[in-house]
Amino acid sequence: MEQWPIGVFTSLDAGLGVQIDVVSELNIPSIHLHAPHAGNRTQARAQEFLGVCADGGITITCVFCGFEGESYADIPTTAETVGLVPEATRAERVEDARETAKFARDLGCDTLGMHIGFVPLDRLGDSYKNLITTTQTFLDELAEYDQKLHLETGQETADHLLDFLGDVNRPNLYVNFDPANMILYGTGDPIEALKKVGPHVRSVHCKDAVWAPGEQRGKSWGREVALGEGDVDVRRYLQTLKDIGYKGPLTIERETPEDREGQKADIQKAVDILTSTKSSVLS
Ligand code: MG
Image (cartoon, rainbow, N blue to C red):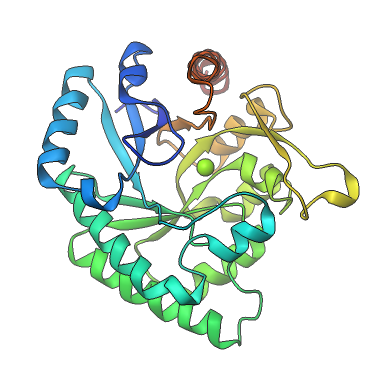
């Protein structure tokens, strides 16, 4: 694959990505796929989807886990409900993630993505320690199939993410960097964060957002907007990706499934911005 192929976050029946027909219509060559609901992660479904991808010349570069009961309604609800962090659902969600890993293998994809949740701040606490061992065990299972896990950024600062990566200490744990999440959650300047976690970045999202005003930052959401319309400086973002040696896909994420036409138009615009910025940064 050429350096920085364009990609887009895509959904089958779960998640907020675009539908695969839009990917084909826009001639986008790679996707991150949000895993379908549990009952639909079948080998037959995988084969059928692979056929559609082959027809469109589309490569699946990452399959994202999603869990029943997650809600991104506001920041406190996200902290309570998302990923492997909530203790009450941790074991069943690891089991669910195992099924997604199997579905990814059926799709010929060696990379899983995940919002692990708000990693507890207390590194000496039981919840943190249990999260570490749970993550290590899951990663060791993935390693048996040569699979890796990319953690989505944003729910913690770059420094705390580095703590977590170091404490888990497994060679198949990497980062999916999302600059807009740093802004939406108010967890730090995305470019500075990217420089810090750079050596661990193996995939990225191209998404944009505006910061929540002043004292609300980190307490209530910033606002997601179309790429090029927010506080992510796309040129600096790509320049920094070049500086850290990242060569993988530039995967557009635009989560407005309630407005499919607007979502498609925003993605086309993002493709145009990335294509022109990419050629100028790489030249
Ligand atoms: Mg993202």
